[in-house]
Image 1 (cartoon, rainbow, N blue to C red):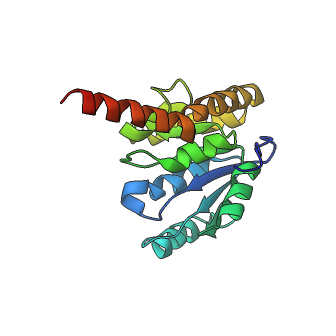
Image 2 (cartoon, rainbow, N blue to C red):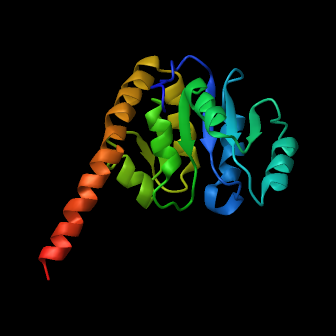
Length: 189
């Protein structure tokens, strides 16, 4: 985010950035979420992967072509535009390490909803900086998405939390942590 662009949270766009792999990334959950969204909200998916055709078929079979928009692989500037145009970022992964896309979304001030996996839990500090949903509980996930998009105050609260937390991942801070850990390792010999 070279220009410190922050989402205005004014567009009815949910952002999802991932490899298109149904099983790990929970793309089938996106269909269920899409079915539950109010008419004016849409899910924009950035990414490519081996299951793109299957996902397209699922979208078409569920008549969600107007609700779930595939953007393909995006270059840096295009991805920045997508993040800043969104009002919410979701991660439906069934398992996930450190999800870099979550920190990217936070950098642009997007509120985060994710299943409670190891990486998202670490990034969101047990739900202090975003909303963590019990793994694979799609009903609660859907309820929380709809609850959040109906409350501008909650959206702004979680936007502030994202912008606070992402500061912990600045390059300078990470370098200091690495230097400290290397020094500790060297001193232990």
